[in-house]
Image (cartoon, rainbow, N blue to C red; front, side, top):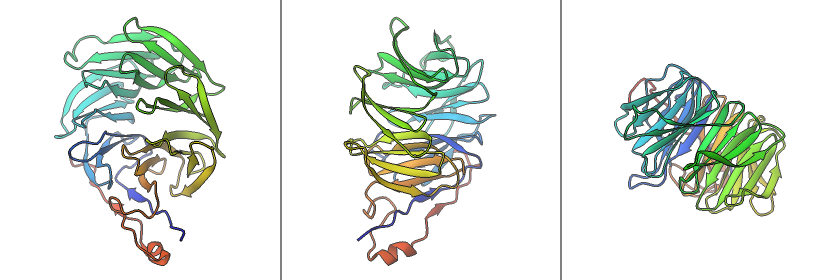
Length: 329
């Protein structure tokens, strides 16, 4: 019997949601952080979308957000020319890192001792979290603003994507460029899965998957619309993607066949990510909401309860979490 996908709608933001990230699985479950143009990044319980708290302090749109390995710290990148590091348990701001332009991307090393940033001033910066007041190491080479910067290859390398239509690999020790990939248009998103030895890059309508060691193209899929973000299932079962046409697409990883498509948002989809256990994926949109979608529709998981027959499922209204953004975490 066919089942209807019923996403969980997470409200609370007042502007477009432009980035999101899941933590790894911790003794307390896993968590989800969202970056929004309202300047108020939010932390939620990952499997239910329940609001935990809001990080207050930025004075401009927040473009990037991430959590460290054990979800004890959060980092955010913003249009107020700063990156901030937060205590993800108390919600307190720990440090503000001043930049010369808009910051778009933040990423912790696995041990949380260093933070990588990238943004409109075309520079990669590495901050020592044990000495945050010290000047960061800087790496230059991109000719346009950096959209995404990630630690790579057990933090020995850095991968960056910029508006100059390139993705570049850098050696951390020598701070020099190792390799560059060129694209016909600017890269819209980049996801690195070290366990799966896979790098996923989107540009235009293309979802491209690369081998992490050689950076050689493994396969690519073409979507019906421009894609802003895509994510690979942890077990490489499928790829989900979203973009300009408000839809979420799911593709079979091996064949590239479109398995499903859902229209749940009321604006372009800016970001999509699988949860660390692969049971759901989250999407953030121009409409100001996050939505959580089941990977296997109809399975009992989180707030989803398997109800048959189909008519009962159809009668279930979308759960909505009303949050209070002004309350500090």
